Each structure stands twice: as structure tokens, then as C-alpha cells.
Amino acid sequence: MEKWNKNIFWIMQKFVYDNMVNRFRLTGLDYNANHRTQYHIYDLARNSAVYNLEVVDKKSTTISNLLRAFTHQPTPSIDKFVEVLESKIKLRLGLIIE
Image (cartoon, rainbow, N blue to C red; front, side, top):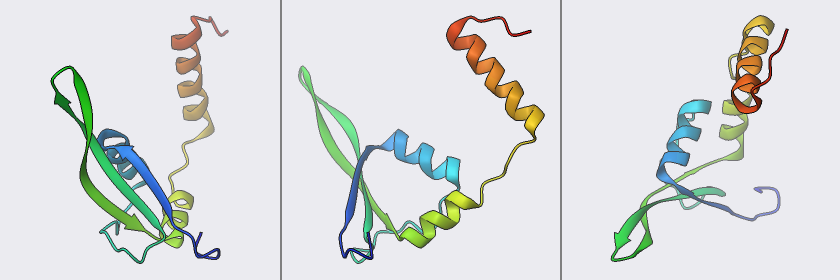
């Protein structure tokens, strides 16, 4: 969005954000209001019978940092990939793959 001079605001729950950071090994996510990609991280706070969104942190990054993280991921061997894929199919559908 830097080319369009627009910001992207991601509003996500803390465990989703943490999963994304760990999965893609994202670094350099300190908050900088000048970064075009911003994350506003919330958690749920109980208020009687309802839950309220509570901002717990703000982070930001650049598109180039995201692209670097997304393109430098380890690639499993084809055998390991197929093994994991088959196990997920079996779990979800109860299929027998021979």
C-alpha cells in the first residue's frame, strides 16, 4: 500500500497475531506510525455477560519486511509434505488413503 500512499490496519486477536509472527518468523515489528501496515492487537475482556475488545498492543511493519518473511520460509521435503497432508485429510474426513 506504500505505492498508493494508504495504510492497512489489521485488527486481530492476540493469539492470531502471535501465531502469525511465530509461523512466519516476523521480526522488526515495533510500532512506527509511519509504517503503512499496522497491527492493532486486542484481547477479550469480560464485562458482566458480554466481552469487550481491549487493545493490548500496536505493532507495524513495511511491505518489504513482510515480503522478506513470507518468501524465506523453509520448504519441507515432498515426502514430509504429503505425509502431513494425508494426516490432515484423514483427521477431517475420516478417509482411508491407500
